Image 1 (tube, helix red, strand yellow):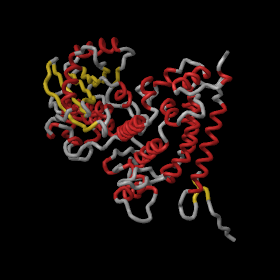
Image 2 (image 1 turned 30 degrees about the horizontal axis):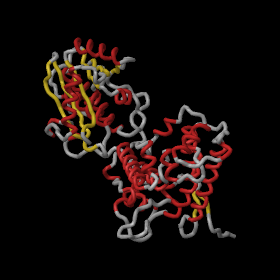
Image 3 (image 1 turned 90 degrees about the horizontal axis):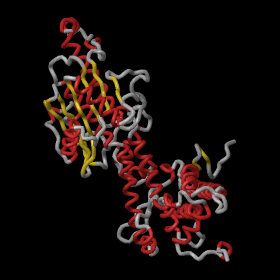
Image 4 (image 1 turned 180 degrees about the vertical axis):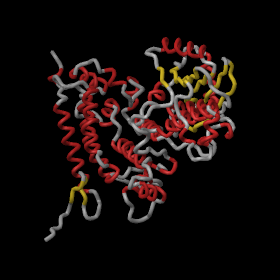
Length: 479
């Protein structure tokens, strides 16, 4: 005999027959209150943890608990148009705001009569609706970057393509609210190269800038062929460039405009600049004798070239590894002409060595140290960031036709910046904002938490109450 139940919990989410999520919202609200109370127990005014530690504990424990699986049960709150009501999980947002207000009061040590928006800006806690917007955006980005082999790949593309009128799934609501298009997002593959993969070039990152500058100057003097690459952001755009030098003289250069800073990152620009440098070397139809160096001012990209684990923008690093191997094979053909003729047309062209043919070194070239070769790449990178690119036929094949896919990191950063702008706009409209802004015009921010970081719990709470002009209880005032 099968018994019917009104609710059923699966993987931590409570389902009801009509998928209204009411039962789960009750569970989430109770969980938020319970975890907030547990944090409060460690935050007593006499001998409790400092405010920034309390905030960290709340974000790492309580927030993760009540936002679990939010992309399933929570619908983003949108302002109504034409005087209409707000849409989305408005009731759940209102219930969770009460628990968040208590958490903000606990972090700052404010009195119970202090307004909620005042405590939140001092504690630097995003309002609940903006907090869930951040959570939903990250969930949408994660789903949009799934590879075709993932079981959710097709359902995600289908749901993002059209917002149906009836029988909407959580995926429909998620991508309609966030506005993320999976077809333009980068794909993060589950596997890349073998963990023991050995790159086709060596790395040189000295411990200090001064040592690195001396090392790359010595290497440049010894090398007949050198390439310097760079990527940066300028005036809202991201650009990349590379310059080829032979015998100390500039021979040619390449520039590429990635797009806006809302869709790409400087890290991507540095990686693209590295592939541009390898492309410049591959266009040379002569043997690269002796030492060949590549200089980059990004330690992050150089170190990431050693890492074969999946992560954002790894498709650009894979292009760099493939370009370096192709460069070795081409140099091998130039050196071993007889061997190449023997394997040509036999299907064994890949048997040619893809490393060890030339001595290719990657050096860290620290920027902003009056190193003339770096300054030249900086100039070209700024031009590229403002929209200037080299002719398509001069660029690597993957940059000639289609624009680069949108960066998952850039989308998350842009959403966080947009949330901060909305929050600051709300705070300026508050009736309590004018006085608080006389004391600290940077709120909402982390400025207040930095201000009280060296104070004990009791003194930081008194400072919060003084800033709010709240009357002190009699037992806190000494005669």
